Image (cartoon, rainbow, N blue to C red):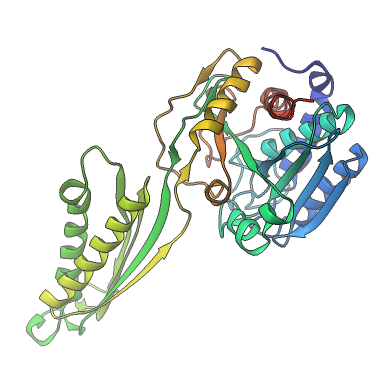
Length: 385
């Protein structure tokens, strides 16, 4: 594996950064301590600009190369998850109910390693813009950075790239594709209101359960009967709540779920069918129905030219590259950056182990020099002096 020698030389330092962040997890937009740690390291490295408070607690850093050239953005997310850790590692989370279970601590360490190397060597033209982003897991810090903070325009970013650790791939294996790579996520909540009363006298009530069950059944037909079998769509109901006693028909119930899609067209179709089903079943059962449909992260769609370029760079770093990865139905708010600029999202194998979002997950520090070498090689190739 062609890890950059200089980066390999400070691999232990990168592990130290990562484990410090791991011990001190923060949630959502409240990544202030992590951001302060990142900003302090960046200033130690001698980067040219450090901008703090972006999207509340994000950090954007700029490293100038030698002379005019492209401007490339590299992104890492910094937030953790609201869950307890069960790794038993010496650097386990020191904050109850919070854990770096998705590898964002590793993503941040990799980008810090990239910054240290690029600030030392400057073997590239143009500029590199490092985007340390909060709130990937919730809210969508990527959306805030792109739409509210205008980071692409503000810093002149022309292309943008990101890595995500992959506990399903062997150490050093890169996986990507030249199109949709992760899904859009939309969440819905359906409220069905009837008229409650004594369960022994249903004729005196308007029971919301038959309507709710009919809605739940009909929603399952969207994938099987409304979408081309060659297109990807998931419609999952994850909550069905109503009632409080055996002998009481409740006045209302609630259904909640999620829809995942890979293209704007299928996404729009899913929403249209969910709305039609809820309204139609409400009318059929003479119920008052309310649908709260929350369109969240859009699909992450790689740009083919940039994805194949990134795959070629990955081959120089690692002999293990898959460039025709089948899309995944999880979601990622790097999608907003890919909507705003050409770029690519890649997975980096860290060795097979517990899945992300699992209490026993831990980022493999051996992957950090590989990821930092990829970013560095990408910049030195795209920004060749």
